[in-house]
Length: 364
Image: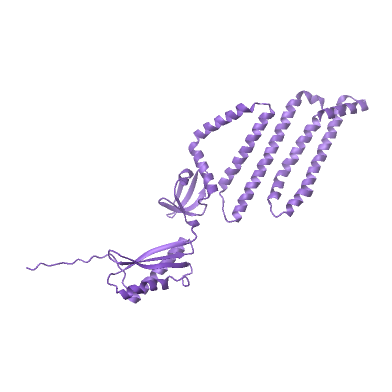
C-alpha cells in the first residue's frame, strides 16, 4: 500500500510539475477522503441494515450488542483511515516504525474495548434472563464475573501490545506465571473465599431470600458477597460467614422443600378403655382432612405406636403443600385445638408424666 501511494504521489507531482510534497499531500487527502467514505459506508450498513435486522428479531441481545459496539467500530475505522492517510508523507518516514507501533496499539486497545463491551452485554443479558425466570443473581458476583473476563481480555491485549513492540513474550509469560503464583500464595485465604463465592454462584446451593440452616444457626440469606455471606437469623441479628467455611458445611435449604412432612405423637392415659382407643385414629382422620384444611396435602397414617413409660402413644404423620413455617405452625395449632376438643367430648384423657407408688404396710 505504501509503495502504491508513493508511486501515485510521484506521478501527481511529476504531472503537476510540483515539489514531491504536493503529490504526497494530494494522495494523503485522497486516502483520507476514502477513509471518510469507508466510515460512512460502515455507518450506513449499521443504521440501514444491521439495526433494522436487529429490531425484527425477537431477542434484544443483538440490539444491545450493536448499540454498544457501534461507536468503537467507527473509531477503529477512523484510526485505520488516518494511518493510511498519513503513510504517503515522506516527512514522517523516519518515524514510520514508531507510528506503525502506535497505531497498532490504538487498534488493539479499541478491539479490546469492543470485546469488553460485548462481555458486559452478554453478562447483563444473562442476568436479566435469569431474573425473568424468578432466579435472582448476586450483583456483586456479576460485577466480579464481568471484571474477571475483562481482565482476561486486557491481559491478552497487553501481550499483543508487547508483541507489537517486538518484545520476546517467553520471559513475560514466565514472569506473569511466577508473579501469579506469588500473589496466589499471598492471598490464599482471600482467593479461597472468592472461588467459594463462584462455587455458590454456579452450583446455587442457596440464593438470596432462601431460609437455610447451618449447624446451630438458621435464618434468611440477605447477601452473598465475594468474601462472605450474610444471614439474618431468626433472633434478628446478622450472621456473617466466610464463603470458604460455608461451602464446607452441610446446609439445609428449606426453599427447596416442595412439601413438608409433619410427624407428632400424642399420648393418652393407660386407663383409657379399648373402645375409645379404637376411636382415636378415626377422630384424627376426621380432623386432619384436606377438604377441611386447605394447606394439608394428605394424611399418611395414624397408628397406636407404643406403650410408653406413662402413656399409650399414637403417632400421626401428614403432609402439607406449603413450606411456609408460619402456615405450618398455624395449621398444627388448629389441629392440636381440634384434637383436644374432640378428646374432651369423648372423655379421653391425655397423659402427662406421673408415677404410681404402692405402699405395703407391714403388720404389727
